[in-house]
Structure formats: structure tokens, C-alpha cells
Length: 81
Image 1 (tube, rainbow, N blue to C red):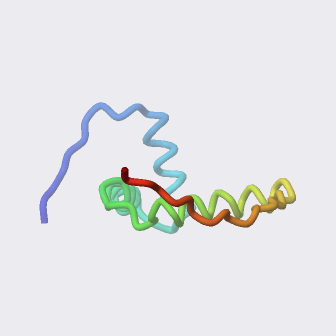
Image 2 (cartoon, rainbow, N blue to C red):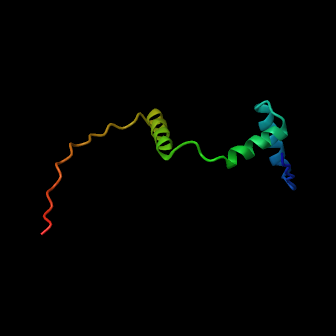
Image 3 (tube, helix red, strand yellow):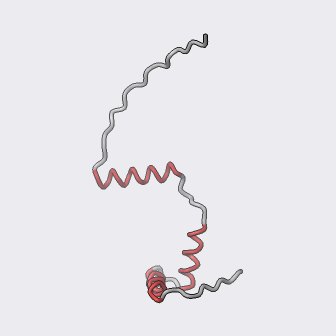
């Protein structure tokens, strides 16, 4: 496995990372690994899933909206002359 050394981290950032690690029952190093791994993993949520999650959150918070969707009209005939 490779090693990575990160220099000049702000003291406040290190403290918040330490607190986050403690809240997740991990060491500081394990928390940093988890953050870096999550940051570079490809997104597992498709656009459709993200949209559905956003819509569900909106419905829960705002009561949702009922839309009336009209029937579709039959397709028009096209003359190629």
C-alpha cells in the first residue's frame, strides 16, 4: 500500500477531523482514509435516483404537489411532398 503525507493542515481542520473520527469510532488516520476514498469513488447514484431522492425530500418537507397530466393527442400525419 502507498503512503501519503499531507503537510500544512490548519489546526482547526485537524481538530474537526479528530472530532469526526471520534464520532465515527475511528482513528484520525482511518477517518482521513475513509474521506479520501469516498471523495474519489465514482458516484453510485444515477441522475434518476438523485432526482427521485430530491423529489421525495421535497414532498416530505412541503407536502408535495399534485399535477394533472393531460391525455396525449394522437400524432399528426406528416406529408412528405
